[in-house]
Amino acid sequence: MALDKLLENEAHSEIERIRAEARDRAGQILAEAQERAQAMIESRTRALETQRQAGIVRARSAADLELNAARLTASESGMTQVYALVDQHLDQITQAPEYRDILARLIYQAREVVTDAESVEVNPAEAQLARELVHDIPVRENPSIRGGVRVVARGGKSGITNTLGGRLERVKGELAPQISRILAE
Image (cartoon, rainbow, N blue to C red):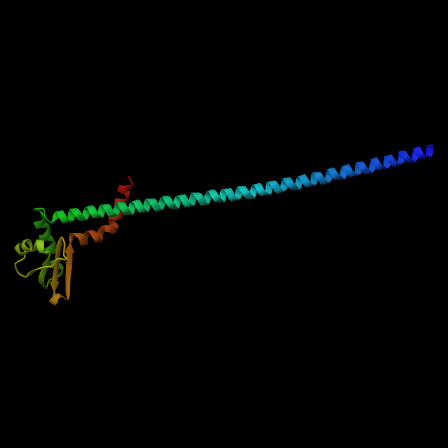
């Protein structure tokens, strides 16, 4: 029986050794799996953080674009309102007593450019005033002229228009930055 006991003890020792090796191997496998899982979690976390940061950048860019578009729209709206107001004032200027001097200067400047003028065209509302200012050539009524004069030569083939509205159109590009700055304040 001692042999049975010895064999049984040896078998138990061998089983314990195998179990210990299996536990060690299982521990190694578990540790490796945990390392891989942790690496995977960290990798996914970094990827998600990168995506989140990219999303934030996209959102900020979109917000900046919307803000700039809103500013531009507001600026354009403000510019439109300013020019509409200026147009109203230009219309009112034609009713002011000092408009006589303004129209005289507009006619004089246009005639300096068109030296062979045959006629002067003005808005029907300004025809009487123009006739008082121009004595050497005919004054014609032209409803398309507003706040100024058109001097015609060579049978209507050449001429120049000199109006307050036309002058405003020519300087709008120069005035735009100043008006935008004022509107932004």
